[in-house]
Structures are given as structure tokens and as C-alpha cells.
Image (cartoon, rainbow, N blue to C red; front, side):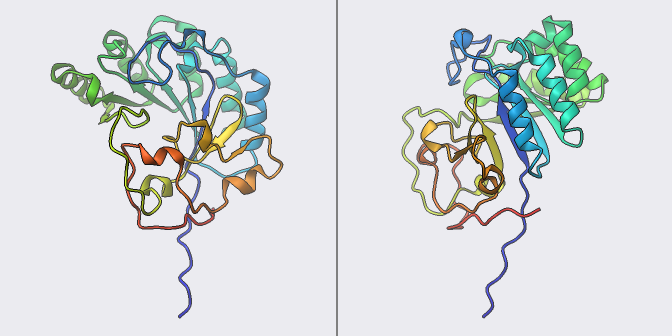
Length: 263
């Protein structure tokens, strides 16, 4: 019998962490107390864009920490928009700076297609979210408000749902998935189903791994400095990430091998 050819897949998202600084102290976040964090340099961000120009992907997701507190946020955002004009640009934010700083809001409106906003009791940003969602939607931006169920009351959850329905935003909920809170270890079998829906995560130091949830440095697979970066992005993978053992979102795909990506 002739082996069945693997189903073609594409890299959906390249996610770049531009800072570990943050203006909030959420208990469930690995960047809590991040005021003394670090910012990615413009030179490193430019190098990352150069690398990304060599591979096919669909979305560029700028993340942190809280990316809008990066001192060069407007310049980084403009560079990404200019150099990758055909990509969907996505900003992950708590919206606090957007509500309080007009130049940052202007940069966001200028450079991003989608804005993903974390909002719950831990963020404590309800007023800011209620202020920015109408403005972003009026500008034609796709807005997704994400609430962690372990950190929000039913009353607030309902209010956010009403806000999103009123302005045509999307409200989603999830559980804490990237923090080890003493949950039982997963029984790891096939590679995670989420991993088959492939993404590339680029850390502050240029290290890379192909899963949004694999936060441990031990899970870094390669670096943007590698000469064969593009080949490694699309290489097959046959083993779990270290963090799969504790990830709330691990789901057995039944696959023992993630095949090489194709366009």
C-alpha cells in the first residue's frame, strides 16, 4: 500500500515577545511584577523581521509583557507594518495604555488589524476596556476580549459579553494554561492537537519554539540567529515540549509526528 501523503499545513502565526515589562500584577501571569522587565531592542526586532521575511506565514502577533509600555512601541509597530504589509498584524494588550495615551492609540490604529485584549478581575482594566472597544471598532478593527475564568466574577463576565455584543467585538473565555498551579501531570500520548495548528513563538532573546503555551526556556527549539532558521521553522517534530506535561490545553491528537509544513 502506498503511504498516504501528509496533509499540507501552513504556519499560521509568528508571535514576537517585545518586552517583559507590564503595568499590571496579575497573579496568574508569568510577567507579574514586570515593571523592572526588559525591552527588546530595535536592532533585534529588525533582525527578527528580516528572518520572518524569508518564511511564509499569515499573522504577525506582537506580544509581551504589555507591548504598549515598550518605549519604542510606535516605531516597532510602524516597522512591522511597513516591512510585512501583506500580513495580518495582531496586538495582544490589556488596553490600559491605549485608553490613557493618545499617541499609543494612534500607533495601534495605524499599524494593527486585530487587537486582542485580556480583561478580568486580575487585570482590573474594565473601565479602560469599555473606553477603547468602541473606538477600535469604529476604526474597523477586529477586537477580541479574552477573560480568564479563574479571575473574573459572573457579573463582570456578563457585562463584558454585553459590551462586545453591542459593538461587534468578540468575547472569549479560557482557563489559566501556561502556569503550573499544582495540577496533575498529563498522560502524554500523541503530540498535542494544538501543536498541529502551528505557530512560531519568538522570545526576547531570539529563541524560538513552535507552541504559544510552551513557556519554559528548556522548550526552545532553535534561534533566529541560526543560519538554517527557515528550515527549522518548517522541520518535522516527533516529541513533546517539556511543558506539555502540565499544560491545561494538552489534547492528544493521535499523531506521533508533526510533518514538515508546506505552503
